[in-house]
Length: 113
Length: 115
Image 1 (cartoon, each protein chain N blue to C red):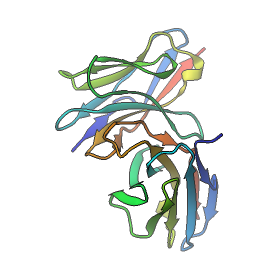
Image 2 (cartoon, rainbow over the protein chains, first blue to last red):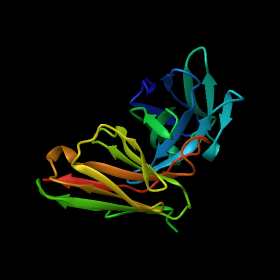
Image 3 (cartoon, rainbow over the protein chains, first blue to last red):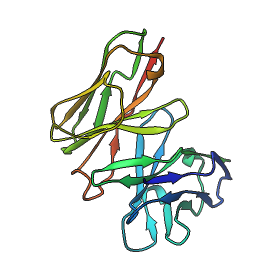
């Protein structure tokens, strides 16, 4: 069965510093991986996805993610964090032929001024 | 213009009642979904419809019944509400059925509280 794990409940970063939100996956077959962000009282918003090709995927709001097949990881990164990046981040993997996403438990990112 | 809109935003009701949540998308997408987010923010898919046909039906109590009158609408009816049904329910839509791995567009959620 497809699954993703987000090992950190919360990540704290100072504004201007680089940030990393971790995600590891377990899949049978090719992994189709996604990152979504959820702001308070809002639905999830798509950030980026890895389907195939370059291991470094660029997405919205300056975020990027690095696919690492040997470590089965898909960590989300940003070179310089903003206070407005503070939110809940979800990693997800596609399961099956339909667009069924299995989400991780979420990581709360807190960026401090 | 809201792309995926859900009503109501908040729903407070008593155990045993029947309630519905409505969802509409104006993105022209073919596929719509219902997800449930519990108090620990864990998200789990419940149902998915493609062009009014049910394509994903997870292990959900049969008190939950989705209905899709057309591809732009997906409603969720819940019978005999229980305390454990309290959660935030998110509607989402996507282009296609998944073969193109198109992203999901989420509504802002309906917070259901059962007392």
